[in-house]
Image 1: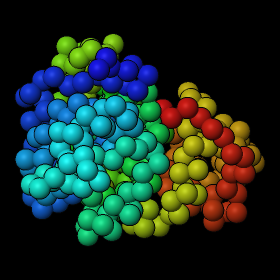
Image 2: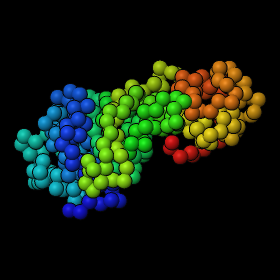
Image 3: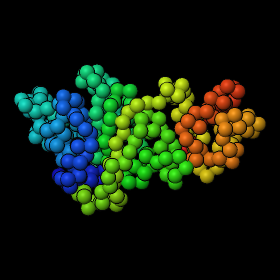
Image 4: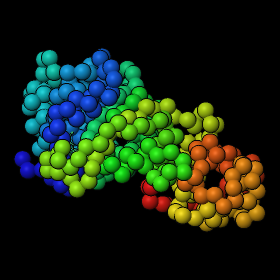
Length: 285
Ligand code: SAM
């Protein structure tokens, strides 16, 4: 079966990397692990040996059928005796993680060498479901992992960093060259771990409102927070007052601010009844 580049099919062929990905998940005994994009089953096989159950989500019907033949009985789609792997032919973006967590009776563990063409939508989908997830170990393009795990003030810190880290800490684990895959992608790849611990309740912000505010303050790159606030419809005087009351330099950019400082700014604007009115749709940086 030739790989389909349009589905991001770059198959991992480094046995040590496969073992490291699964080991990075920690103890999975008795737990359900959802694998995103099992492909030809390289990670699935290792997961099967370590997890209570593996639910593998594959959008390519040909690959899913071949995996089902390997892991499950074809008749009626029932799990073969002894197999703890279930293959579901589905687009991960349409998958119901909450229902899977209810069925599993606990929070879900996630693994995957992600298809790079939809990395950001998958990360956002995972973030939306963070309440029913425990931890994830994911392979993404190195530049994306750099952004996801970046600290305030670093070159890579931006909207994607804040969006991911508001759902729990993310740490880079290791990087692989293109030669670890077949066919080799054009980019290096990095595995990172994400431990889900959403911060909205602790920081006392509404999830949707605060993430919308983040899209507004990160919309215009290389512009100051004050400029971004004005572009999103906040009066100049109100923007200056809110920045001052949050203890943020008037010339500061969102890219230099910690999550806590951005929360202070949001609360100052809320208190003054001056939250931004315009919806903006920046690139997920
Ligand atoms: N896990 C395998 C490995 O490491 O060798 C394959 C990884 S490959 C980078 C990405 C896999 O995700 C492919 O098998 C591809 O068909 C699948 N995929 C692409 N888009 C998907 C989607 N929307 N939902 C689920 N799987 C998808």
